[in-house]
Amino acid sequence: MLNTDSKLALGIELGSTRIKAVGIDGSHVPVTSGDYTWQSTYENGIWTYDLAEVWKGLKTAVSGVERREDIAAMGISAMMHGYLAFDRDWNLLVPFRTWQNTITAQAAEELTALFGFNIPQRWSIAHLYQAILNEEPHVYKIAHITTLAGYVHYMLTGENVIGIGEASGMFPIDSEGLCYDAEMVKKFNHLVSDRNLPWRLLDILPGVLLAGQPAGKLTAQGAALLDNLLAPCIPFAPAEGDAGTGMAATNSVAPRTGNVSAGTSIFSMVVLEHPLKKVHEEIDVVTTPTGKAVAMVHCNNCTNDTNAWVGVLGETARLFGGTPSAGDLYTQLYEKSLEGDPDCGGVLVCNYMAGEGVTHMDAGRPMVVRTPESKFTLANFFRAQLYSTMSTLKIGMDILAEERVAIDSLTGHGGLFKTPVVGQKYMAAACNAPVTCMETAGEGGPYGMALLAAYMLHKAPGETLENYLNTHVFAGVSGTTLAPDPADVDGFNDYIRRYRQLLEVERKAVEII
Image (cartoon, rainbow, N blue to C red; front, side):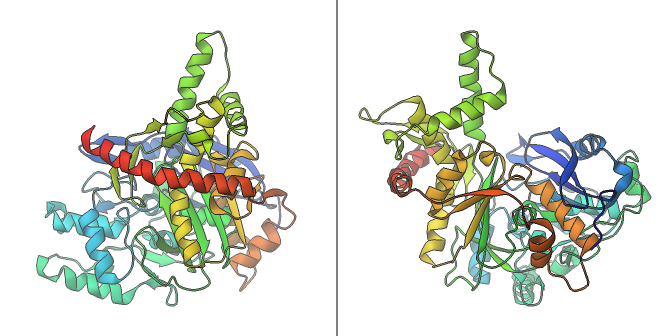
């Protein structure tokens, strides 16, 4: 394997709050990065991002990367799912519909019944079919549908292809044939055959590639879109979603391994040994970057409400002359929560800023609820805040436990795990499984995408992704593992019992407020 510090692999991720670029050296260590902060907007009933800002953000993030002349391979990752529809000349037909939208309930329900396979509302095929059901005029002009990562990859390389893990969030994948499920494609085409559409499904979906396969090179036109910050001809790995890059970043691509990515949204990925026995609306079945089946519990809401409360508490501190930094605020509040009761003293928090597919909620109303007997302290309040970030995930993970899905290791990454011990301890209690955090836990997706680019560049002939990660990336990497504390497990189980009751209050709040 080539292992030289002079060659960099670059991973770029368009996340929900940041566009970040991370460069790793020949030892797979992050050595340079750049980023750009952005956020979705709610326009005409749709959560979206302006594609013009995509390019502004990409240029800003890449401009922060040092040693750009040393980049030998790169790849694009982004928020999975959603809907980007283009005509033959790649003109956008309707604004980008992100994973945050819960506007495809009818389509998701009908397709799940038709396929005998769970189709979540945020999947691209649900958005496409809902647009057909809504008789939206643009569906007759569609020549391409893709994801955000797929769009950026195409614009930079001219190749309309995506990685298989990313593709598995557009349409179900056949993990044996390593392509879109042919029987389900046939069923979909038959379902819409009376609509007089000028296309069939495979005509408009991007091609599918596996990790390690070349996916094109940066074109002169693509380099120009980035203000020529990068030189043409850099090889690209297949574009992957944040789920696939999270698996790579945590060495969770083999059966019985899993990871939890926790930031603006939260999701767990567990690589399956065997297919699930039942279809569960709460569980997505996607794939690893090499096509292995993965059970995914995806929740729209994680740290947004907590971030808002940290802001309010910071304002309070400044009212009394304090000047805590954002980092200190988070660290102190996270650590204070450890003094709280394992069941949060009866304090309950629902953190829903948006709808939530796992609990069948079309919108969110963040709330704090307690009884007169609750122990309302700062420690209990903030512990309840952090429990709320993972409570909906726990509901899904409990379903996997009932299905007897084996998990030997669970790795945490993302912002929730940046403060040592705290998020890790609560996640171990929620999932009743040991949770490991590595030094790269805060890097997440762009680091994982850089690893996939390095795998394409350096792998030996026939070398699997699992072997590459085990042997060349994570051998000797330091991390900490926390086993679940029985008192925390009992406390979280008591909390989740009352949280389920709180969801009925949440449902009513959405209805009347």
